[in-house]
Figure 1 (cartoon, rainbow, N blue to C red):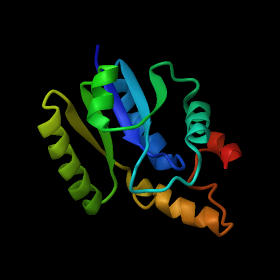
Figure 2 (cartoon, one colour):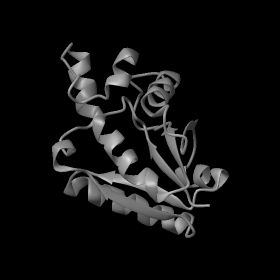
Figure 3 (cartoon, helix red, strand yellow):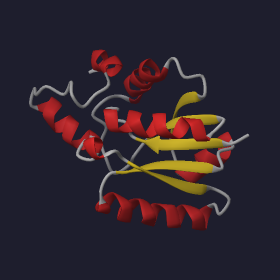
Length: 153
């Protein structure tokens, strides 16, 4: 069985995240969306709300499982039996950052392979960070967020 983990903060989930999930789910028998606790970023939304949001977005996809976790992502990957880690790449800077993480993860867990999915051009400017800023100042984020997630904001 091919099991993958798509880790992230999903704070909030964006259409760019959804695109990466939809394009990668067919490659695996089971895809976990792991909501990681990032010690360097304070959360905008509580983890339980992010879980609810993701469940609403992907409720019709039986191969997708939503799980929150703490600690090293490679350790969590091992605990769920994931041999693959899916990462979305929007920009060159994303690639450099993700490459460094993939290399470190490979040093820690050589049996877990990183899979990079390049975002579609229309989604390359969408990031949770930018969406959070728009939300903080009362802006309209409907074009960046899946409609199923809007009720949780």
